[in-house]
Length: 280
Image (cartoon, rainbow, N blue to C red):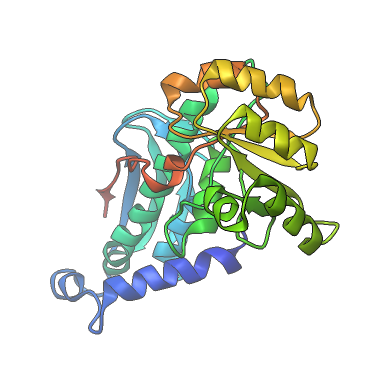
């Protein structure tokens, strides 16, 4: 679970954006002061839930007296119509926090849902599905958490986590060998070095220089199998580039260790979750 210290700033920014300078003028005008309600957050289609802590803060930062009861935890599956959580408290505050809570819950659950779909597609192989740094600015920790809730894993959280030499680094550095040599001289003994390769010849060159991991970019399953044979366990193998739930199984069957997919975080559709008035 992510600590509140990480989640709360993002939720506060979202509430501040939504409240503007005058607060919720609709709820304050229409709903009597002191009125209390119970509402339910319910899934409108099947999926995997993630982001309940952020959703709860979307309500309790507006009014700490709000109580949210969860009927499923992050990582749990729901069907259409299932109640995810019941929320009780002052009616004005519930309506004020509604959109922020649902934005986080729907977005993060959408990421968890598509991740679970791809994870299911590689069942029976050793490949782990991982996300990338293609995240929404300011929401990286939350989005990567949602990937884990869906059964996936995380790639780098930041540029400082590891050396990842990509095609533009290689071009500017003058090739695979000089790029790896410079990285080895610069990186400390605790820093892993990964390099992107587009061809098997580049892969052989990278292995000769002792790369810790190789990113096998846009290779067919047959080429990936050859690449895995060349590496022969000497480095972590990561397949990337245009991988979908339909193609993930074939990619995984090639024997790679990791499959990295950027669209898990940058293009996952929101899981439709609604909030409905339940009782006075």
